Amino acid sequence: MTDKATLTIGDKSYDLPILKGSTGPDVLDIRKVYAESDHFTFDPGFTSTASCESKITYIDGDAGVLLHRGYPIDQLAEKSSFLEVCYLLLNGELPKADEFAKFEHNITYHTMLHAQFDRFFEGFRRDAHPMAVMTGAVGALSAFYSDSINVDDPREREISAHRLIAKMPTIAARAYKYTVGQPFVSPRNDLSYSENFLRMCFAVPAEDWKPNPVLTRAMDRIFILHADHEQNASTSTVRLAGSSGAHPFACIAAGIACLWGPSHGGANQEALEMLETIGSVDNIKDYVQGVKDRKYKLMGFGHRVYKNFDPRAKVMQKTAHEVLGQLGHNNDPLLNVAQELEKVALNDPYFVDRKLYPNIDFYSGITLRAMGFPTNMFTVLFALARTVGWISQWKEMFEDPTRKIGRPRQLYTGATHRDYVPVESR
Ligand code: SDX
View 1 (cartoon, rainbow, N blue to C red):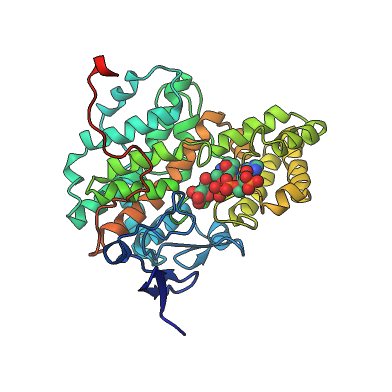
View 2: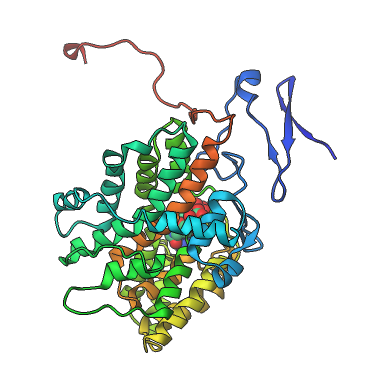
């Protein structure tokens, strides 16, 4: 089996070592190509480029497989908890009972925010998009927790990771409460992670808040499904920001900003708004024709890596049915539209030929809306869950002794040298 490839340019040949992973495609090591051949490689959307070595998440897009540290996402969604998945992503192994108890205690006792931080939200208009609030608030954390931003100290890196995982629900719930004009609700140490979050979002002083175990389980499962996803756009943003030595609060704020895009994490809001635009099963045919006429994309469909079903979408669909059933919304018209739209798309050559399947964002919006979240909170929930993936990938990068600052080059097609021309001569 050859362990190298040969690149030939003109009359010169260059050896490219082939590096093998534990599974998935091998990679051509091109790190010396420019130095040896004076040529750059060119891959603007990184469709054929591995940006790093990682042990955290593996995706087989053709087989519709997603593994976190080797464990299949459907097993984790069914049998694990979000906090246990956080431990797994951060540390590489499922925790023993005492390890988990210590981790859970650390997270539970970091959920509060500095009292002064609550005033930070008052700088925003009440009608601000919660993702704008999240981007600003998380970026501001370093102004309140500057005792854990020395990125070269493993202990400070661990404290920042725990603080981010613990405080994101509190910040996200505040972003929601602020925009609906309700008082902030403080975290409670006697509640589980997801129960605590739902209470901070939906409890009001006027009455006692009653937990709903089905909704709590659904929330926890939704967080698990969104926890990490290899080198997606926002994770790559976090890694690139971190490669300069930027502290984790700044890097996670950069990841949140990237996730907000409609092609990425913003798609869950767009997908639900698309279903609302379609409105009824009768309108699906015309809407799909608009997609084929390239007027707009089918939001919640397609994926750079999955050319088969997104395994998370299947679990998301099952969760949607459970939640809607629990809430007595079995005949939610949007669920009927979504199911019929999926059936139409999966049988239409336009989508089949392009290998477009539902992704995680297709069913998440219906579920979250039924749970009481407004559409502008959907990407906030994605960011809350993805924080553990971002910080795990950031931590892995910092533990890599070969870490270098990310600095891509370009194919320059602009003006070549020319001298300045005074305005009177132009
Ligand atoms: C997430 O990367 C990750 O892992 C992301 C994520 C994560 O967990 O981090 O999984 C989360 O971002 C999921 C994706 C959410 N985005 C959407 O649902 C938005 C709609 N989807 C598209 O924007 C698109 O599918 C992307 C951005 C997700 C992927 O785009 P690619 O890989 O760059 O594919 P492409 O644009 O090259 O499309 C290939 C073809 C094109 O047709 P042709 O021009 O070749 O004829 O498929 C078409 C596209 O026009 N196409 C779609 C489509 N997605 C691609 N046509 C209609 N509807 C769509 N949704």
